[in-house]
Image (tube, rainbow, N blue to C red):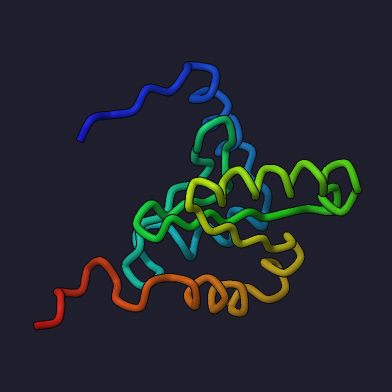
Length: 128
């Protein structure tokens, strides 16, 4: 498998975002890291094309975005919609949650993510 080239500024920005994670991102990451959710591997602050998504599962082609209050503003909402359309055109499913939902209802958020993951986890042997 060949490693893909990422410009140094994208790598730097991903690292900055990881070190500046919000409390909601930290809380969700604690549940997604180390293949904890049905054996699926997630990455955080992952670059896809010109965008950086909060969490990404390559196996499921699933991006998870956590939004704060600023995403309710019309200009930001328009950008988010355009961004989602670009990612969906690449075959990536986008799930969006409000930060407050993660903080107040983490179990519900995890259930919603689990519902869109393929039924058999990558760590399970194939059925005969």
